[in-house]
Length: 246
Image (cartoon, rainbow, N blue to C red; front, side, top):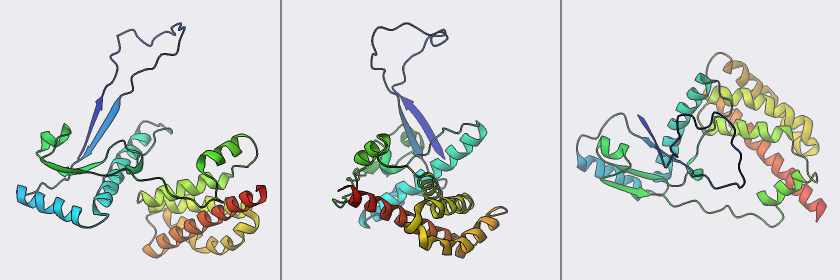
C-alpha cells in the first residue's frame, strides 16, 4: 500500500490562478513537500516480529538501503501507471538518493501513514561520489555543453533511460530502449563504440522478445551487460575530451 501526503501547500482561492497578475517582484513561493509511505501488504503478527525485522535490517550493512530502494521501485510502478493514465510525459520517477529524508521503520497503520513510527532508522544522505581529477564534474561538463564546447550525444540520454528501466525492474522497456541506445551509440561514439557492435545480436533478440513479454533471464542479463558497456564507452569519450582540452 502507498500513502501520499502533501504538506505545506499554499492555500488557493477559488478564483486564484484564472488570470495573469501583474507583479513588481519575484517573491519566493512556499514549496509543498510530499511524503510517500510504502506499507507492506502483510502485517507483522506481533511487535516482537517487527522489532526483529528492523534489527536484522540494521545489522547487515546495506540492507536498510536495499529496503528503501525496493520501496522506491514500488512507488515508481505507481508513478508509471499514473503517467500513462494521465497521458503526462513529464511525470518523473523518484530515487532514495534524491529524497530529502528516507526512513525505514514500523508502527501502527494510521501512525505510519501520518509519518510516525514505533521505531525507525533514518538513512544518511549518500556523499558525493569521488571523481578522478581528469574526469569532468557535472557542473563543469554542464557548462561545457551549454557553452557549445562539448556535444551532448543522443545516445547519452537513451542509455540513461535504459539504465533507469533496468534499475526499476522493467525488463521489457529496458530491452527495447537498449536496442535504440545501442544503435545510436555505435553511430555516435566512433572508436570508443567500436566494440559495441557485438551486442547487436543479443540485444536485438531481447528487444524482439520484449514485444510480447519479459525476455528470458539470459537475455535480460545480456541487456544489462550491453548497457554497462555503453556506459563505459561514454566514460572513455568524456575522458578523451578532457585530455584533449587540458
